[in-house]
Length: 276
Image (tube, rainbow, N blue to C red; front, top):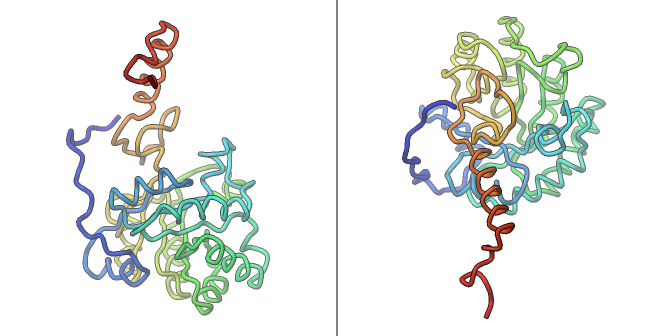
């Protein structure tokens, strides 16, 4: 586990609700943006209270919550179910919900209907879609319908079969072209996933909208991580780009072991935790 300060940083003093204009304006102001994933009411409330700028209800829930090997089986109804729980817990952060596989690839009409359902049924502020150059018209249609949309360039988990696995994407000119097209089409921000740091730095310098990196180095306008990775809940070796700031898996295992020992010894519940 990477080293981290012994005392946690205080939550952000800025408690104004995050909006799309404020999110976009952070780039101009030189303020780095913080984005984390949440899939339920409990974690969303914790992240919001801690002061993150945005919460992503990612289709990564297919792997993190459902235990699947890819995000492909996740449905639109499942995204709406989890998104609604998250929004009810949030008072300040911008909530962005992923459009899952086949909810935006079939037609622009389907995309508008599905993205509209997400905003209407969850109360979220924006949607995110994985985007190549071929998604320019889709992004433009969403923007023209006043549906805020974030793009996603680089490693695209919904394209894992085509890509042959979860690999760093290194085609600099293609990545730059995809990011430019997304921004020009109306995306208010772009996730850059698993691309070399110098490439992400170039894209960030050339785009007018914020870039949010995950495995894309320190020069993006903000960073996003899967929260269980950040706090050390995910089993196994984390990816290279994950810096763990806690080891909650160890903490939870120790607490459950202590509780089980007390129950088996007959010392829990004690008098202080028993109604008289």
